[in-house]
Length: 142
Image: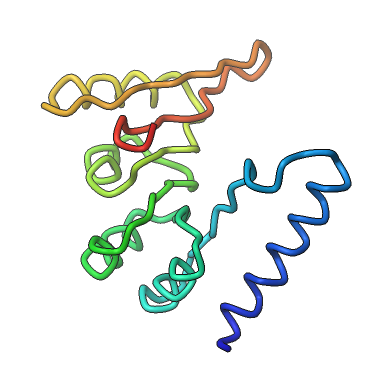
């Protein structure tokens, strides 16, 4: 058994125990694997254990791993700080953007979507004090 498979089994057991302790259904909990600096082959090994959510915080890493991962069923979340000049690149590779932290960014994303044939669905959750948008999902993962 590889170290990746062994570690994921330990993590899943901890999640299962925490779910039972809190009265939640273990199957309702999704694990997002932060894959910063992890090779595409190691990500595939993790996906083969049943995990399907990966998170990248750098656009260059999204691009670098895309070709090797595109035929492996998974969802890629962008979890890093997103600069407005990188929007067009990130929407090519990510299924979800979890790091929209300012209205200006949300507005520029909306403009980019208007140019796409397959528009993204924008799910916003504004907090009154921080005025942050929390998640953006592509319709194929809803």
